[in-house]
Length: 110
Picture (tube, rainbow, N blue to C red):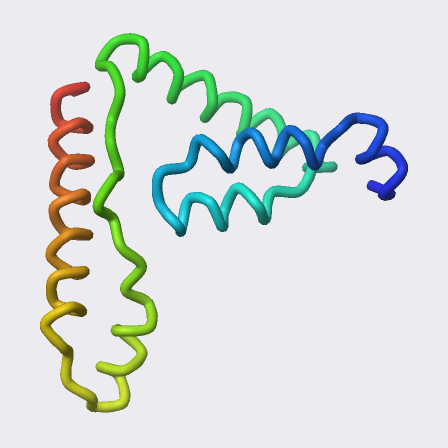
């Protein structure tokens, strides 16, 4: 899509509002990287996923991803043989806690 169409549709404003609702840096980054889809097959699949997610939210309520930390840099340091600091281990713990909440939320739905 060309920039003029995106400006007319106020796409960048929509993305900015979406980004405000993200609770983690990783979520904010994913929101900022969103681009319009142009293949019908992908659009239909995304709409189905959105409908399913909304249905789950209406039935089960909100899920929080707060506390989820980006541990990508720590993992790269571990790959080269470095050791983890206490703050890195705490970030891994926070991510695992958020993952555990997400898994429990999923299990309540089924």
